[in-house]
Length: 71
Image 1: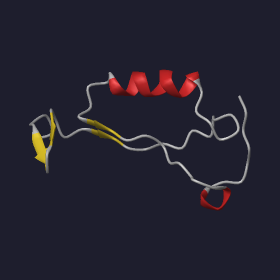
Image 2: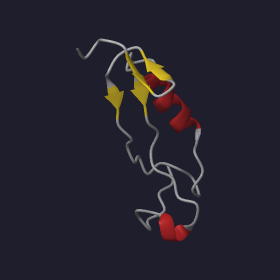
Image 3: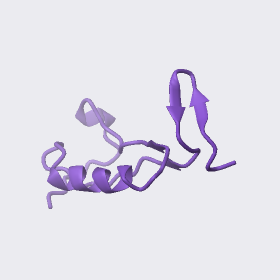
């Protein structure tokens, strides 16, 4: 069943494999970097039917962590 197509509302997925969102803490000043693009490109080409991106916050109060990490 995991490799069978599924339709959720108007979205048709080629299989039932889902890559869950991951918080990587690798943004610079709250902005995504080229690292994010490379990371998500690899995950998108994995063959999973659905890929969810990591969490976002519209302001500082919405962050899950107050640390500022710059790579």
